[in-house]
Length: 480
Image 1: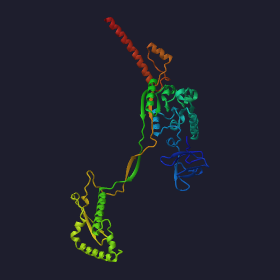
Image 2: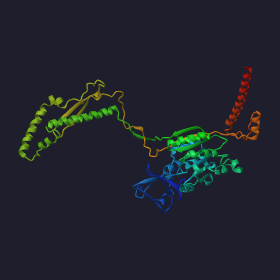
Image 3: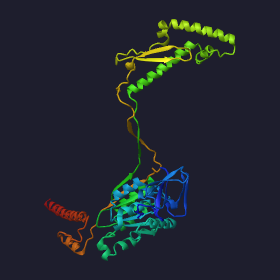
Image 4: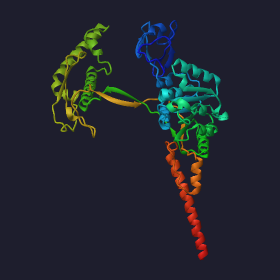
């Protein structure tokens, strides 16, 4: 498979992670350059860099991550030649078909090779993949990629063939039933394929041919990948007619979540304190506007008092008026302070019954005016169901949100099972005709033959029951 060395070497295929949506493969060839909006990178500079490194650009204004290829990353980065399978479908198909190390898998529709790469990793060095493609250019490109990625060509067979029209042919069975030393080692299975995957525009035309290449000595499975429900209906009909059982259709949907850490929400006490501070500032501003006599421009009177008016006579007059007004305000401050400023006090102050907060501010524009506002800390009504909590709000909270999935397109997956068949030998046929019990030798009692034995026994019992019913009916007729 891909290189297992810890460092990047010339000729290696790497995955460049630019952003979450921009992932692409790169074949390392010294002397070439990779250019993007994130900077320019010479291939020779990437040689010797450990996989997974963050590589800055020569200008220092960008960076990229260089990753080791995996089937999952290759699915995200490969050049699309056809519609491909993504991780959600690939993992589900692999598990449901029972593909494991040493399995023999037949794939119709190589396409871009997304499913092929994952399958080759799953079956390991003892399995075999037969992949069929009817388009010559796509087949040649798949062969080139398998060679560049280091796959053992002895365990993958690529063939140009239209299986919908011509079937799978006899190559699969010929390779799997060559006998001799290879068959004893079990390197490529015994009597056929363990699973068949059809990614075709008309999979119902290939169902009968797929049945021929599946093993007959054990339960096997088939999967058909179709984007339209009309295709599914025709496929299900063909599977039923071909003798498949346990036919089910699934649709896999992705719902990825983004998990992030954010500051916790402020406590009730902190929110209440902030609201009180805002109300105090608003009240101070209102009082200053009333005192200055110029709503919306409290600094104008201060300018007049400093003698900055253009008309000196008018300035002196205004200065004297301001002074007289300041004296009168100072005399009546004790009696009228509460009326001008007011108190921010709630009738529900007995909820907390605590201290009063005294706020003192100094007005620079309208003279030395001291303002005091008494506020009940617990007078703010608490929302029902919420309680005040102490402590700082600097603690972090873990939140999740559903992310939009760009590659969320999926299709329908139709699965079916093919039960094992028991091949009747001449000796078994002779015993059955004589009405004797049919016993299987060690060679015939392989995995899955139990079902065939049960069916054989049931058929024998049905024949005996029919004979008894017939004889009983004859007796009843004679008696009548």
